[in-house]
Length: 418
Ligand code: PMP
Image 1 (cartoon, rainbow, N blue to C red):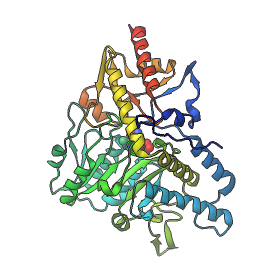
Image 2: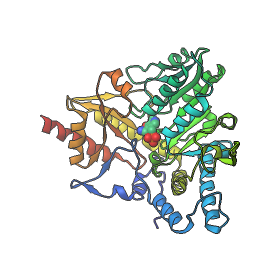
Image 3: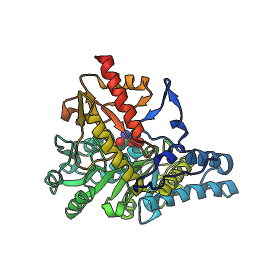
Image 4: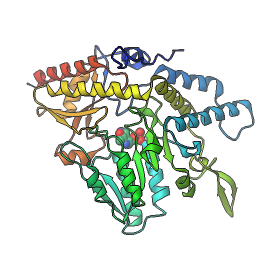
Protein backbone atom coordinates (compact mmCIF):
# COMPACT_ATOMS: atom_id res chain seq x y z
CA UNK A 1 0.00 0.00 0.00
CA UNK A 2 1.35 3.40 -0.87
CA UNK A 3 1.06 6.19 1.62
CA UNK A 4 -0.36 9.53 0.71
CA UNK A 5 2.70 11.69 0.35
CA UNK A 6 1.01 14.99 -0.43
CA UNK A 7 2.66 18.31 -1.06
CA UNK A 8 4.08 20.42 1.68
CA UNK A 9 4.67 24.15 1.47
CA UNK A 10 8.24 24.84 0.38
CA UNK A 11 10.45 27.64 1.64
CA UNK A 12 8.69 30.28 -0.46
CA UNK A 13 5.26 29.01 0.53
CA UNK A 14 4.98 27.17 -2.77
CA UNK A 15 4.07 23.54 -3.11
CA UNK A 16 6.75 20.88 -3.16
CA UNK A 17 5.48 18.83 -6.06
CA UNK A 18 8.38 16.42 -6.23
CA UNK A 19 6.92 14.58 -3.25
CA UNK A 20 3.47 14.20 -4.78
CA UNK A 21 4.74 13.07 -8.17
CA UNK A 22 5.91 9.83 -6.61
CA UNK A 23 2.29 9.01 -5.74
CA UNK A 24 1.44 8.59 -9.45
CA UNK A 25 2.91 5.34 -10.77
CA UNK A 26 2.06 6.12 -14.41
CA UNK A 27 4.36 9.14 -14.34
CA UNK A 28 7.41 7.00 -13.59
CA UNK A 29 7.79 5.42 -17.01
CA UNK A 30 9.68 6.03 -20.22
CA UNK A 31 7.83 6.68 -23.45
CA UNK A 32 9.76 6.16 -26.67
CA UNK A 33 12.99 6.06 -24.66
CA UNK A 34 12.33 9.34 -22.82
CA UNK A 35 10.95 9.94 -19.33
CA UNK A 36 7.23 10.65 -19.66
CA UNK A 37 6.28 14.33 -19.51
CA UNK A 38 2.53 14.31 -19.00
CA UNK A 39 0.90 17.58 -20.06
CA UNK A 40 -2.58 16.30 -20.90
CA UNK A 41 -4.40 16.39 -17.57
CA UNK A 42 -7.23 18.50 -19.02
CA UNK A 43 -8.18 15.46 -21.10
CA UNK A 44 -7.71 13.02 -18.22
CA UNK A 45 -5.52 13.19 -15.15
CA UNK A 46 -3.28 10.41 -13.87
CA UNK A 47 -4.33 8.45 -10.82
CA UNK A 48 -2.47 8.33 -7.49
CA UNK A 49 -1.70 5.05 -5.75
CA UNK A 50 -4.12 6.00 -2.94
CA UNK A 51 -7.00 5.83 -5.43
CA UNK A 52 -5.78 2.64 -7.10
CA UNK A 53 -5.35 1.02 -3.65
CA UNK A 54 -8.80 2.05 -2.48
CA UNK A 55 -10.46 0.56 -5.56
CA UNK A 56 -8.50 -2.66 -5.07
CA UNK A 57 -9.39 -2.71 -1.36
CA UNK A 58 -13.08 -2.18 -2.07
CA UNK A 59 -13.16 -4.83 -4.80
CA UNK A 60 -11.18 -7.31 -2.68
CA UNK A 61 -13.15 -6.94 0.55
CA UNK A 62 -16.37 -4.96 0.41
CA UNK A 63 -17.98 -5.51 -2.96
CA UNK A 64 -21.66 -6.36 -3.25
CA UNK A 65 -24.68 -4.48 -4.57
CA UNK A 66 -25.79 -1.40 -2.65
CA UNK A 67 -28.97 -0.37 -0.84
CA UNK A 68 -31.05 -3.52 -1.20
CA UNK A 69 -29.08 -6.19 0.60
CA UNK A 70 -29.42 -7.39 4.18
CA UNK A 71 -26.05 -9.12 4.29
CA UNK A 72 -22.80 -7.70 5.58
CA UNK A 73 -21.08 -7.07 2.26
CA UNK A 74 -24.08 -5.19 0.92
CA UNK A 75 -24.04 -3.03 4.04
CA UNK A 76 -20.34 -2.38 3.58
CA UNK A 77 -20.73 -1.50 -0.09
CA UNK A 78 -23.61 0.84 0.75
CA UNK A 79 -21.50 2.50 3.41
CA UNK A 80 -18.59 2.99 1.00
CA UNK A 81 -20.91 4.44 -1.65
CA UNK A 82 -22.80 6.75 0.69
CA UNK A 83 -19.63 7.89 2.44
CA UNK A 84 -18.34 8.88 -0.98
CA UNK A 85 -21.41 11.05 -1.42
CA UNK A 86 -20.71 12.77 1.88
CA UNK A 87 -17.07 13.32 0.88
CA UNK A 88 -18.17 14.97 -2.36
CA UNK A 89 -20.73 17.10 -0.51
CA UNK A 90 -18.01 18.41 1.80
CA UNK A 91 -15.53 18.90 -1.04
CA UNK A 92 -17.74 21.32 -2.99
CA UNK A 93 -19.59 22.62 0.08
CA UNK A 94 -23.07 21.50 -0.92
CA UNK A 95 -25.49 22.11 1.91
CA UNK A 96 -27.00 18.61 1.82
CA UNK A 97 -25.70 15.20 0.76
CA UNK A 98 -28.98 14.63 -1.14
CA UNK A 99 -27.79 17.33 -3.55
CA UNK A 100 -24.97 15.09 -4.82
CA UNK A 101 -26.10 12.86 -7.70
CA UNK A 102 -23.52 10.37 -8.97
CA UNK A 103 -23.28 10.25 -12.76
CA UNK A 104 -20.87 8.93 -15.39
CA UNK A 105 -19.29 12.37 -15.67
CA UNK A 106 -19.85 15.96 -16.71
CA UNK A 107 -21.51 14.97 -19.98
CA UNK A 108 -24.15 12.86 -18.28
CA UNK A 109 -24.68 15.49 -15.58
CA UNK A 110 -25.42 18.17 -18.18
CA UNK A 111 -27.67 15.90 -20.23
CA UNK A 112 -29.59 15.10 -17.06
CA UNK A 113 -30.30 18.79 -16.48
CA UNK A 114 -31.19 19.34 -20.14
CA UNK A 115 -33.70 16.50 -20.23
CA UNK A 116 -35.04 16.53 -16.71
CA UNK A 117 -34.95 20.20 -15.73
CA UNK A 118 -35.25 22.00 -19.07
CA UNK A 119 -37.31 19.77 -21.31
CA UNK A 120 -40.53 19.80 -19.28
CA UNK A 121 -40.26 23.57 -18.71
CA UNK A 122 -39.12 25.07 -22.00
CA UNK A 123 -41.62 26.54 -24.43
CA UNK A 124 -41.33 27.94 -27.94
CA UNK A 125 -39.41 31.21 -27.78
CA UNK A 126 -37.66 30.48 -24.46
CA UNK A 127 -33.90 30.78 -24.49
CA UNK A 128 -30.83 29.03 -23.12
CA UNK A 129 -27.76 31.24 -22.84
CA UNK A 130 -24.22 29.86 -23.17
CA UNK A 131 -20.84 31.36 -24.19
CA UNK A 132 -18.72 30.86 -27.27
CA UNK A 133 -16.01 28.93 -25.40
CA UNK A 134 -18.08 26.00 -24.18
CA UNK A 135 -17.10 22.34 -24.56
CA UNK A 136 -19.40 20.36 -26.87
CA UNK A 137 -20.87 18.77 -23.70
CA UNK A 138 -22.18 22.18 -22.74
CA UNK A 139 -23.53 22.93 -26.23
CA UNK A 140 -25.05 19.82 -27.80
CA UNK A 141 -27.38 18.80 -24.92
CA UNK A 142 -28.89 22.32 -25.11
CA UNK A 143 -29.22 22.12 -28.89
CA UNK A 144 -31.05 18.82 -28.45
CA UNK A 145 -33.49 20.19 -25.89
CA UNK A 146 -34.03 23.29 -28.03
CA UNK A 147 -34.95 21.05 -30.94
CA UNK A 148 -37.33 19.12 -28.71
CA UNK A 149 -39.08 22.21 -27.31
CA UNK A 150 -38.75 25.01 -29.85
CA UNK A 151 -36.50 26.99 -27.52
CA UNK A 152 -33.50 28.89 -28.84
CA UNK A 153 -29.79 28.72 -27.99
CA UNK A 154 -28.12 32.11 -27.56
CA UNK A 155 -24.34 32.48 -27.49
CA UNK A 156 -22.39 35.22 -25.70
CA UNK A 157 -19.17 36.24 -27.47
CA UNK A 158 -15.53 35.84 -26.46
CA UNK A 159 -12.86 38.40 -27.28
CA UNK A 160 -9.54 37.92 -29.07
CA UNK A 161 -7.85 36.89 -25.82
CA UNK A 162 -10.47 34.21 -25.29
CA UNK A 163 -12.02 36.18 -22.45
CA UNK A 164 -15.70 36.55 -21.62
CA UNK A 165 -16.81 40.00 -20.55
CA UNK A 166 -19.59 39.76 -17.95
CA UNK A 167 -21.34 42.72 -19.60
CA UNK A 168 -21.69 40.91 -22.89
CA UNK A 169 -23.31 37.93 -21.16
CA UNK A 170 -25.57 40.06 -18.99
CA UNK A 171 -26.65 42.03 -22.08
CA UNK A 172 -28.19 38.82 -23.43
CA UNK A 173 -30.10 38.00 -20.21
CA UNK A 174 -33.55 39.11 -21.30
CA UNK A 175 -36.90 37.84 -20.03
CA UNK A 176 -36.84 34.94 -22.51
CA UNK A 177 -33.73 33.35 -20.97
CA UNK A 178 -34.54 30.41 -18.66
CA UNK A 179 -31.07 28.96 -18.13
CA UNK A 180 -27.49 30.21 -18.18
CA UNK A 181 -25.00 27.38 -18.80
CA UNK A 182 -21.33 28.34 -18.55
CA UNK A 183 -17.96 26.73 -18.09
CA UNK A 184 -16.11 27.56 -14.88
CA UNK A 185 -12.82 27.10 -16.77
CA UNK A 186 -12.46 26.71 -20.56
CA UNK A 187 -10.75 23.46 -21.56
CA UNK A 188 -9.46 24.90 -24.85
CA UNK A 189 -8.29 28.33 -23.68
CA UNK A 190 -7.90 28.11 -19.91
CA UNK A 191 -10.11 31.15 -19.32
CA UNK A 192 -11.60 31.32 -15.83
CA UNK A 193 -15.10 32.74 -16.11
CA UNK A 194 -16.53 35.19 -13.55
CA UNK A 195 -19.10 32.63 -12.47
CA UNK A 196 -20.09 34.30 -9.22
CA UNK A 197 -20.82 37.60 -10.94
CA UNK A 198 -22.69 35.93 -13.80
CA UNK A 199 -24.76 33.82 -11.40
CA UNK A 200 -25.74 36.88 -9.36
CA UNK A 201 -26.85 38.72 -12.52
CA UNK A 202 -28.77 35.67 -13.70
CA UNK A 203 -30.54 35.16 -10.38
CA UNK A 204 -31.59 38.82 -10.31
CA UNK A 205 -33.51 37.96 -13.50
CA UNK A 206 -34.86 34.60 -12.31
CA UNK A 207 -32.52 32.67 -14.59
CA UNK A 208 -31.28 29.28 -13.37
CA UNK A 209 -27.50 28.72 -13.55
CA UNK A 210 -25.61 25.58 -14.54
CA UNK A 211 -21.83 25.59 -14.24
CA UNK A 212 -19.65 23.12 -16.15
CA UNK A 213 -16.92 22.61 -13.58
CA UNK A 214 -14.99 19.83 -15.37
CA UNK A 215 -11.83 21.93 -15.64
CA UNK A 216 -12.18 23.78 -12.33
CA UNK A 217 -12.60 21.12 -9.65
CA UNK A 218 -9.07 19.61 -9.99
CA UNK A 219 -7.38 23.01 -9.90
CA UNK A 220 -9.02 25.33 -7.36
CA UNK A 221 -11.26 25.31 -4.30
CA UNK A 222 -14.90 25.12 -5.44
CA UNK A 223 -17.73 26.21 -3.19
CA UNK A 224 -21.02 25.76 -5.04
CA UNK A 225 -22.94 27.88 -2.56
CA UNK A 226 -20.48 30.79 -2.69
CA UNK A 227 -20.50 30.61 -6.51
CA UNK A 228 -24.28 30.68 -6.59
CA UNK A 229 -24.50 27.67 -8.92
CA UNK A 230 -27.91 26.02 -9.10
CA UNK A 231 -26.32 23.07 -10.87
CA UNK A 232 -22.62 22.19 -10.97
CA UNK A 233 -21.27 19.34 -13.13
CA UNK A 234 -17.87 17.63 -12.99
CA UNK A 235 -15.97 14.44 -13.85
CA UNK A 236 -13.95 12.08 -11.65
CA UNK A 237 -11.32 11.26 -14.27
CA UNK A 238 -10.10 14.85 -14.48
CA UNK A 239 -9.64 15.08 -10.69
CA UNK A 240 -7.36 12.07 -10.21
CA UNK A 241 -10.27 9.67 -9.80
CA UNK A 242 -11.55 6.84 -12.01
CA UNK A 243 -13.22 7.16 -15.42
CA UNK A 244 -16.96 6.66 -15.56
CA UNK A 245 -17.53 8.70 -12.41
CA UNK A 246 -18.87 12.20 -11.96
CA UNK A 247 -21.26 14.38 -10.07
CA UNK A 248 -24.24 16.53 -10.69
CA UNK A 249 -24.72 18.94 -7.83
CA UNK A 250 -28.18 20.47 -7.85
CA UNK A 251 -29.98 22.63 -5.32
CA UNK A 252 -32.38 20.37 -3.47
CA UNK A 253 -35.43 22.44 -4.29
CA UNK A 254 -34.69 22.15 -8.03
CA UNK A 255 -33.79 18.44 -8.01
CA UNK A 256 -36.87 17.67 -5.96
CA UNK A 257 -39.16 19.21 -8.54
CA UNK A 258 -37.53 17.43 -11.49
CA UNK A 259 -38.80 14.15 -12.97
CA UNK A 260 -36.37 11.20 -13.11
CA UNK A 261 -33.89 11.06 -15.98
CA UNK A 262 -33.81 7.27 -16.39
CA UNK A 263 -36.11 4.56 -15.08
CA UNK A 264 -35.05 1.30 -13.46
CA UNK A 265 -34.08 -0.24 -10.15
CA UNK A 266 -33.18 1.86 -7.11
CA UNK A 267 -34.95 4.98 -8.36
CA UNK A 268 -38.38 3.76 -7.25
CA UNK A 269 -40.23 3.32 -3.98
CA UNK A 270 -43.00 1.16 -5.38
CA UNK A 271 -43.71 -0.26 -8.84
CA UNK A 272 -47.17 -1.39 -9.92
CA UNK A 273 -48.49 -1.78 -13.43
CA UNK A 274 -50.98 0.98 -12.73
CA UNK A 275 -48.32 3.41 -11.55
CA UNK A 276 -44.91 3.80 -9.96
CA UNK A 277 -43.76 6.09 -7.18
CA UNK A 278 -40.25 7.45 -7.41
CA UNK A 279 -37.61 7.28 -4.74
CA UNK A 280 -36.43 10.29 -2.78
CA UNK A 281 -33.33 12.33 -3.60
CA UNK A 282 -30.73 11.56 -4.75
CA UNK A 283 -31.80 7.99 -5.64
CA UNK A 284 -34.51 9.24 -7.98
CA UNK A 285 -31.67 10.10 -10.38
CA UNK A 286 -29.53 7.00 -9.86
CA UNK A 287 -31.36 4.25 -11.74
CA UNK A 288 -29.69 0.84 -11.82
CA UNK A 289 -26.61 -0.48 -10.05
CA UNK A 290 -24.21 2.44 -9.70
CA UNK A 291 -20.46 2.54 -10.22
CA UNK A 292 -19.69 1.61 -6.61
CA UNK A 293 -15.96 0.99 -6.97
CA UNK A 294 -15.78 4.22 -8.98
CA UNK A 295 -17.40 6.13 -6.13
CA UNK A 296 -14.91 4.53 -3.71
CA UNK A 297 -12.05 5.69 -5.95
CA UNK A 298 -13.52 9.15 -6.34
CA UNK A 299 -13.81 9.54 -2.57
CA UNK A 300 -10.14 8.51 -2.29
CA UNK A 301 -9.26 11.17 -4.88
CA UNK A 302 -11.13 13.77 -2.83
CA UNK A 303 -9.27 12.69 0.32
CA UNK A 304 -6.00 12.94 -1.60
CA UNK A 305 -6.77 16.46 -2.83
CA UNK A 306 -7.96 17.59 0.59
CA UNK A 307 -4.80 16.29 2.24
CA UNK A 308 -2.71 18.42 -0.10
CA UNK A 309 -5.07 21.39 0.01
CA UNK A 310 -6.83 23.00 -2.94
CA UNK A 311 -5.41 26.44 -2.18
CA UNK A 312 -1.89 25.07 -2.34
CA UNK A 313 -2.64 23.29 -5.61
CA UNK A 314 -4.15 26.44 -7.13
CA UNK A 315 -1.12 28.53 -6.16
CA UNK A 316 1.35 25.94 -7.45
CA UNK A 317 -0.47 25.73 -10.77
CA UNK A 318 -0.84 29.51 -11.06
CA UNK A 319 2.92 29.90 -10.81
CA UNK A 320 3.58 27.00 -13.15
CA UNK A 321 1.11 28.29 -15.75
CA UNK A 322 2.91 31.67 -15.71
CA UNK A 323 6.18 29.84 -16.22
CA UNK A 324 4.70 27.73 -19.03
CA UNK A 325 3.22 30.70 -20.85
CA UNK A 326 6.42 32.74 -20.56
CA UNK A 327 8.62 29.86 -21.72
CA UNK A 328 6.34 29.12 -24.67
CA UNK A 329 6.33 32.79 -25.65
CA UNK A 330 10.14 32.57 -26.06
CA UNK A 331 9.87 29.81 -28.68
CA UNK A 332 10.35 31.25 -32.15
CA UNK A 333 7.35 30.87 -34.44
CA UNK A 334 4.88 30.28 -31.60
CA UNK A 335 1.36 31.67 -31.51
CA UNK A 336 -0.34 31.52 -28.12
CA UNK A 337 -4.11 31.20 -28.02
CA UNK A 338 -6.12 32.00 -24.93
CA UNK A 339 -4.54 34.93 -23.11
CA UNK A 340 -7.38 35.96 -20.80
CA UNK A 341 -6.22 37.81 -17.67
CA UNK A 342 -7.56 35.12 -15.32
CA UNK A 343 -6.65 31.61 -16.40
CA UNK A 344 -6.08 28.13 -15.03
CA UNK A 345 -3.95 25.16 -16.04
CA UNK A 346 -4.18 25.31 -19.85
CA UNK A 347 -2.14 26.89 -22.65
CA UNK A 348 -3.09 26.41 -26.29
CA UNK A 349 -0.63 27.24 -29.06
CA UNK A 350 0.39 26.81 -32.69
CA UNK A 351 3.95 26.50 -33.95
CA UNK A 352 4.83 27.97 -37.35
CA UNK A 353 2.53 26.27 -39.84
CA UNK A 354 3.07 22.79 -38.39
CA UNK A 355 -0.22 20.94 -38.12
CA UNK A 356 -1.03 20.40 -34.42
CA UNK A 357 -1.38 16.62 -34.94
CA UNK A 358 2.10 16.43 -36.52
CA UNK A 359 3.47 18.48 -33.67
CA UNK A 360 1.80 16.20 -31.11
CA UNK A 361 3.30 13.15 -32.79
CA UNK A 362 6.82 14.61 -32.85
CA UNK A 363 6.47 15.55 -29.19
CA UNK A 364 5.30 12.04 -28.33
CA UNK A 365 8.46 10.67 -29.96
CA UNK A 366 10.27 12.66 -27.27
CA UNK A 367 8.07 11.41 -24.42
CA UNK A 368 6.00 14.60 -24.20
CA UNK A 369 2.22 14.06 -24.06
CA UNK A 370 0.08 17.00 -25.14
CA UNK A 371 -3.38 17.21 -26.71
CA UNK A 372 -3.96 18.35 -30.28
CA UNK A 373 -7.09 19.12 -32.25
CA UNK A 374 -10.30 21.01 -31.55
CA UNK A 375 -10.55 19.86 -27.92
CA UNK A 376 -14.31 19.32 -28.32
CA UNK A 377 -14.67 23.08 -28.67
CA UNK A 378 -15.08 23.51 -32.43
CA UNK A 379 -16.79 26.93 -32.11
CA UNK A 380 -13.65 28.23 -30.36
CA UNK A 381 -11.52 27.03 -33.29
CA UNK A 382 -13.95 28.72 -35.72
CA UNK A 383 -13.73 31.92 -33.70
CA UNK A 384 -9.96 31.99 -34.26
CA UNK A 385 -10.17 30.67 -37.82
CA UNK A 386 -8.05 27.58 -37.12
CA UNK A 387 -8.76 23.84 -37.33
CA UNK A 388 -7.21 23.10 -33.96
CA UNK A 389 -4.42 23.84 -31.50
CA UNK A 390 -1.71 22.07 -29.55
CA UNK A 391 -2.58 22.24 -25.88
CA UNK A 392 -0.40 21.75 -22.83
CA UNK A 393 -2.39 21.32 -19.64
CA UNK A 394 -1.15 21.07 -16.09
CA UNK A 395 -1.95 18.90 -13.11
CA UNK A 396 -0.76 19.20 -9.54
CA UNK A 397 2.14 16.81 -10.31
CA UNK A 398 3.71 18.92 -13.06
CA UNK A 399 6.82 20.98 -12.47
CA UNK A 400 9.18 23.34 -14.27
CA UNK A 401 11.24 20.48 -15.64
CA UNK A 402 8.12 19.30 -17.52
CA UNK A 403 7.75 22.74 -19.07
CA UNK A 404 11.46 22.83 -19.99
CA UNK A 405 11.12 19.41 -21.63
CA UNK A 406 8.15 20.67 -23.64
CA UNK A 407 9.95 23.75 -24.94
CA UNK A 408 13.07 21.70 -25.77
CA UNK A 409 10.88 19.25 -27.69
CA UNK A 410 9.25 22.15 -29.55
CA UNK A 411 12.68 23.49 -30.57
CA UNK A 412 13.51 20.04 -31.91
CA UNK A 413 10.22 19.93 -33.82
CA UNK A 414 11.15 23.23 -35.48
CA UNK A 415 14.45 21.73 -36.61
CA UNK A 416 12.69 18.64 -37.94
CA UNK A 417 10.06 20.61 -39.84
CA UNK A 418 12.73 23.10 -40.90
N1 PMP B 1 -16.70 20.23 -20.07
C1 PMP B 1 -15.42 20.55 -20.13
C2 PMP B 1 -15.00 21.98 -19.92
C3 PMP B 1 -14.46 19.56 -20.39
O1 PMP B 1 -13.17 19.88 -20.46
C4 PMP B 1 -14.90 18.22 -20.58
C5 PMP B 1 -13.91 17.11 -20.90
N2 PMP B 1 -12.93 17.45 -21.83
C6 PMP B 1 -16.25 17.95 -20.49
C7 PMP B 1 -17.13 18.97 -20.24
C8 PMP B 1 -16.78 16.55 -20.68
O2 PMP B 1 -16.33 15.74 -19.65
P1 PMP B 1 -16.57 14.15 -19.71
O3 PMP B 1 -16.08 13.70 -21.05
O4 PMP B 1 -15.75 13.64 -18.57
O5 PMP B 1 -18.03 13.93 -19.53
